[in-house]
Image (spheres, protein in one colour):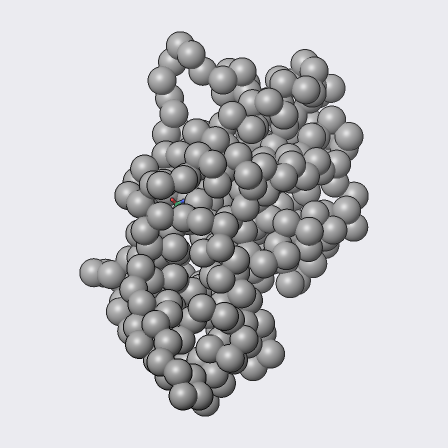
Length: 317
Ligand code: XMP
């Protein structure tokens, strides 16, 4: 029967044999899948693995710094590339969800191509693709989606001419987490919720500005930190906040306000294909709502999303 230990031994041996002394480049997202893929390759080929972690400016609050720091402790060779401004420029004025995804995907490819170019003589591109990605062709670890959807042979960026290695292709998420534990990856990292590649861009309905990203990062931070403090984080498959393109009237002291509305979303799921909204304690919701409205300037109303998938999706875009 399948065990994480046997999987690690076999996969490391196969990777060694297949890759030999060649160089591999891998896009890290900070998520479970790309991290586990990186650690397997690291075990197999050591310093010939070059990891790139791109800050698209649409990550959670402090995520770029925190995740980079965590990778340092794991002995991985990671280059952090802060391309926030480039992504925000590419997104300027775009409101349509699919156009946002395209703009982000294209920018990601440009950045990744520049970076891969600097590492001479790379042979392989490694990805954290897992089995549900293969069957659904939608990935929760971002970069692989955009790479896969750009199969226009011909003017391919250099890094896309690389041979692809996907050591997790046959695994489900829970198996990936068990393999990660076997490799000694930190529990907190392995327990991280899925987060979409386009990041907060698809949780800001309408066009994207640096200010909206900042507001949503603050709201999201209060919500996620609250889930952790209340011991609820691990009971939830995925959670986040959505900045609605709606302003509502509120009152502060003697003044009427006219500010943003945010929605909170938390779902239970096993693979993201179906999902139920989570019955979070009223007291938690009440506290979280108060903290958000008191702390985050520009937000005066919080609502909770009680829709399940299907027919609603997990994300709003
Ligand atoms: P939906 O909203 O379709 O989301 O119910 C299912 C899962 O997929 C994630 N998601 C994405 N992941 N690129 C990604 O890498 C995307 O464009 C994308 N859209 C949705 C979503 O966060 C959830 O985990």
